[in-house]
Amino acid sequence: MLNLTTLLASTVSCVVTGIAVYVLARKPGGAQVPPRPFLSDTRADDVVFLFRGRLLVDATDAARTQLRSTPVETDDLGRFVLTFSHRFEGIETALREATETDGFQLAEVPDDPDSLRLVGEVVDDCLRIRLDDPLRDSRSETLAHYSMAAMRAELFTLRTIAERSPIPTWKKRDDGLIIWANSSYMTLAQAVAGDEELSAWPPPDVFDSVPIPDLETVDLSPARISLATATDTEAWFDVIVLPGEIETLFFALPIDKLVRAENALTEFVQTLTKTFAHLPIGLAIFDKKRKLALFNPALVDLTGLPPDQLSSQPSLHGFLDALRDRQRIPEPKDYKSWRMKIAQLEADAADGTFEETWHLPSGQTYRVSGRPHPDGAVAYLFEDVSSEVSMTRSYRSEIALSHAVLDHLEAAVAVFSSAGVLKLTNQAYDDLWNNGLAPASSEIGIGEAIRDWAARSLSGAGLEAIRGLVLQSGDRSQIARPLILRDGTPLTCRAQPITGGSTLVTFDRTQDMARLPAVPTESEPGPPGQAAV
Image (cartoon, rainbow, N blue to C red):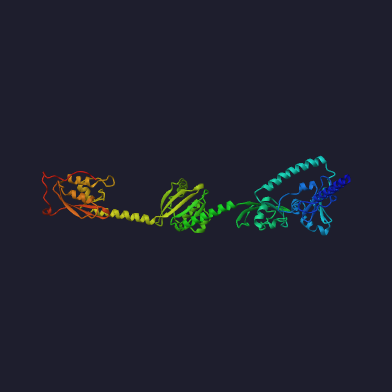
């Protein structure tokens, strides 16, 4: 019984030991770890990697701390290349040809025997890569310890800044191969090229069309590039290129919001331009530096200035000087007063109070007004009011002529509005009734006028009919009533409707006294004198 128990315990122990050995000989990816003798000659601080194909099957602790863990889409060998490619030129070619050449050796600084070296050896079906320091044994351990600690802290800070930067950043060699890129670039490359293109290092160059300037030419002007993503959206970037002797650094600033704002502004300006193009009023907008920023076709027609001259963004003074040369501005008495006028024009326009009428030597008349705009800009409006001024002058001339004709009539004439207000009289009316009040200075109603007429007459019984006709609306007919002044002069008062509901009242001297009605006696009531309108 004891022998059976001992045998069973030995069997279980062997099985467990076998399972443990098998588990330790396997990695999560399923690849078998070669025997540890491959790393038996290493020290604790040695940097040694062991690859089978593109899979890292073993490495020293110091090596694992140096190997990057990002980007996660890249395999082990890709992350190794990403870690060391910017220090050892030609590492991709050396790894690709390692099997044929039985290994490789790369120096961090060529022709420097003391520089770090990357040494690769083919061991069975694996590639063993170690980082050698020729001066490691001669360095002070304390100095090396603190130097490495400081460098690691600084390296961690720089890596964190680069990886967490929202600006896609990458670095390329002279042959165009990307040797380093941050997470923002990898995310952008994935959105543009797709997941399949990021399966191995290096990632695709989605900005391959960006030119690299000459090293001697210091030009930080960004190149504006648009990329179409997998979701059919357009992403815009300003790419800044910093060339170097061996490598070139790129920064892609996302400017989607800026491009949208510029497009909206452009559309807005185009809309305004189309709107202003159909305006008959000339528009000239000067920016805060008093340069012509915007004008419409009407300004070209009104000023006679060629479009190319206006497109060259002349200053306000230059613009007005050009108008003066073409006699599109009133000619001042002297140049000094002209310059003072320009300064006053600019100051008044900035305050929004400038408005003038320019009578040009050509006979045209312009109305010019200035209005302030945001950010210190000033807008000037040029309007040709020649026809309006001509019409106003003609209208005033006709009115003056009509007044002159009325003043030469022997009959006294008065015009009352539909509301019964006296609007117009001639000289004969003023002489007859001596009222001396112009209609513009005070409003005289028909009731007040009738009382005045009756007070200066011996008979005014029929004047109420005149007031009724003046205030009547609808269809009206002409009426006439006799009137005798206190000096015995016989008159005929006629009222007849005219246009606009007004009434024309005339007083004519009556020649045929027999046709006049009898004059009422003193006992007869005169016209009622109430209620002026």
